[in-house]
Image (cartoon, rainbow, N blue to C red; front, side, top):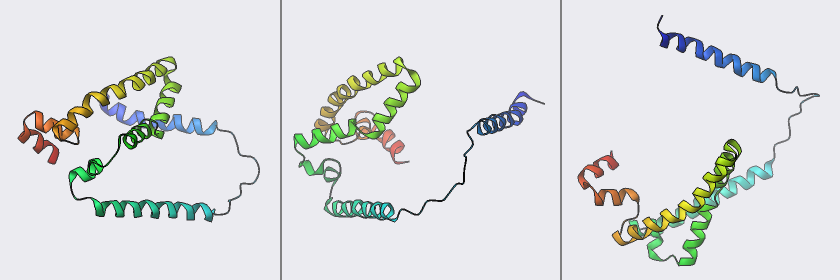
Length: 159
């Protein structure tokens, strides 16, 4: 029997054993478990939020006529609005949870990574954003296809 066959047979068994042991070590729930009542107000608020978001999407999609409208709101965004959008992107839940998770898992090294992210993100933004604007392009893929072999990169992007 080859080594890969042994690994393919033994590894799932070992993982199943480890997961079953960790489940057995969990605390026991004492008392009678009761099903909670359905929270209809939360469900209704969620559906209202989804309908409102879809309404905004439909309204804005009818106003979009070109790539400039789609990517840059037709050039009608002020510097303050753009700054708020950048700040919102930087302080998003994904960034916050990702960095805090990295600090939790890596300790002080994770803190250094978060500082690198803090310094590196605006630096890269300022280095790339002006070049994108000057080229009249909106995505990094557009710039790559413009700067390198357009036929080759277009075929990679489209397929």
